[in-house]
Length: 410
Image (tube, rainbow, N blue to C red; front, side, top):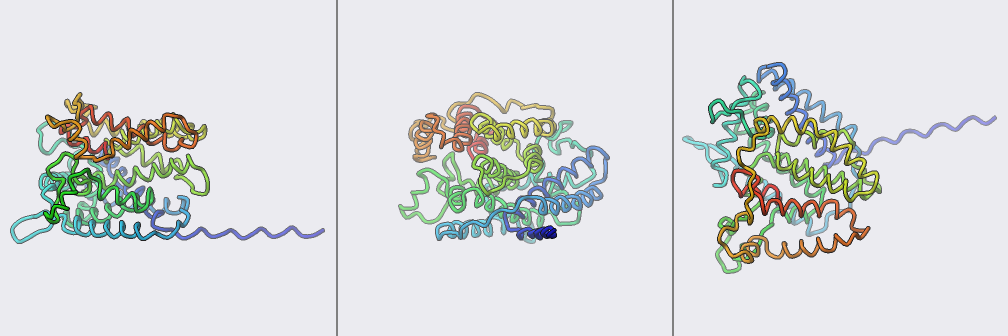
């Protein structure tokens, strides 16, 4: 009898690449922040001891995720246009976050005037949360009122501060790393086109540069402002929410398409989606709508996965939303407000100036998708719910300041 053939040696796992580190890093940040929150809520632990333990456990989550997450296949080399988009992202990150906040002998200073009010609030929250204040904390501004704010990004910086990192240096460091994560996730989603669409989104205002007025922010005086300057630099929750959301969308797209690209495992999707309200509440609304699109238009296995993920994510998402809203108190922030920031401006000119021809292209796209072409299944899962979200943001105010509806447009 011939001996049985020896089993083939196990093939070593391919080395981790940037997308693998990105996904594991997002899970590590989420793990660090959520563990710290649970320690402060459940054990009344001090800020310093809870920070040290949560950082250790967060690093453990990162290491485990890096080993367990499926490796991404190597993609084709970047085209020249993609490389230009990467260069633009690198220059923006260096300029906007390298000088995010700095000191002179007399004061703290910021580069962006859009950030004057936001950064002072973030610094106050970071220093407040890094103390031994009881959790869930009261508002540091309003007496006897709970803190109604998605504190995840500031809580992570407070953890770093409680562990010994200076608050200003922590802001710059997390700004740099967060921007790299944002542009890395945009690259993972749509390569150079995704990065360029984020950096250069605008209507007709930017064409004023052709009149010879030099380099300046031409969108500052219109409703639709520069996304990176007016949103990414000022609203720190987006440094986490954008890459986390794009990781989820990329995973759902992989499930819709099938093929060699493996999606994130269920547990990773559950962590990212279920804890999202702690970092950015509007992102949960948007991703929930897109997940509902997968239930409505996806194939059988995709529908089953989407329903299972939604049901599993509901308890933590509801619990965190209860915390950050002070018991589901909207404070009159949601109201019927048609036209967004149109005001008395002529309707056609307002939307043309702010968004160019994009509204017309979206209308054409929607008309084509409703024909139920089977080849458009993937697009229907994402585009039709996204159009519904845009309509919601156009007709309803979803935040105390109507401009904040840009979080849904984004």
